[in-house]
Image (tube, rainbow over all chains, first blue to last red; front, side, top):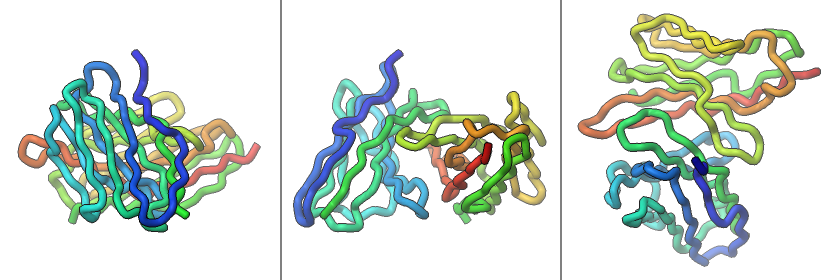
Length: 112
Length: 114
């Protein structure tokens, strides 16, 4: 089975812009979670989607949003980018009921 | 109550030595404790996991020790190798309603010197 894929892998944006990141889960996985990873802050949970519905949400401002499509692919959008949004954004998928998450390689976002 | 405290933040071990990373939690509702390993440029990957009904789980050179009464668990890497150099995250999972919630430690950067 192909693993979790994320596009793009690298992205440079300027403050105030918006960005959309994409995640394709492992085939058959219906749950997709998004994380922000920064040095010293570990993995910060953004949100989880299951069958096109957001079922868990972390403590991030409304500038961070996401959605999931009927094929389980997910997108994450960050509007009005700030310098502090520079991070590695990770996507993880699982079947839904299992505990193990399978991570993609991440999208590294740099905000200038 | 839902935090997972991980230590140390970084660790340097000589090849062949034992690497030990510790995690502590407060909420007794946690019922699944995974460790993830992350290499540079990659996403984290499940390394080993334990449930609170056992005190130890071993997979090759990797062992989780679990102390339910102290609400602590640790990862031991025996005969550490340079290829083990990575960031290690502990986590704790619990069921909330119909959903599983996963709380992460902040990670430990392990460097194994040749």
